[in-house]
Length: 98
Image 1: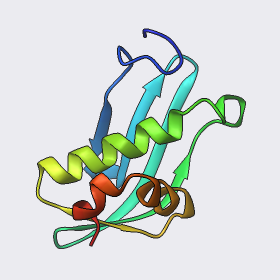
Image 2: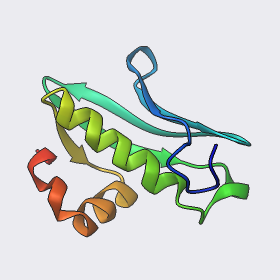
Image 3: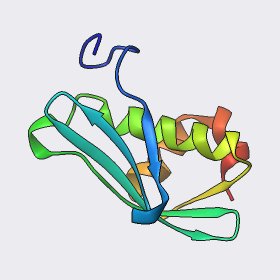
Image 4: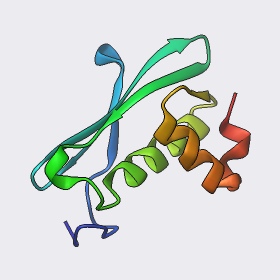
């Protein structure tokens, strides 16, 4: 990993069988839980280990979630307040919202 916010870090991985996207990093795993509804991903919870909050990990996770949805032609329904707030701060991803 290039640093706590470095671009050389881990990639966001979709675990469809678990209904979540994960971002592994030195010290743990952050995840965003979702359920599928056709081509929509209803994201209802994100979690970062408490000791690692405030380091931009959830933002990296959410960016990867939106990139994956965009690349696979799916839309995101942000039921998680963090994901909804992130989407408002990144209007370039508005086309990915359901």
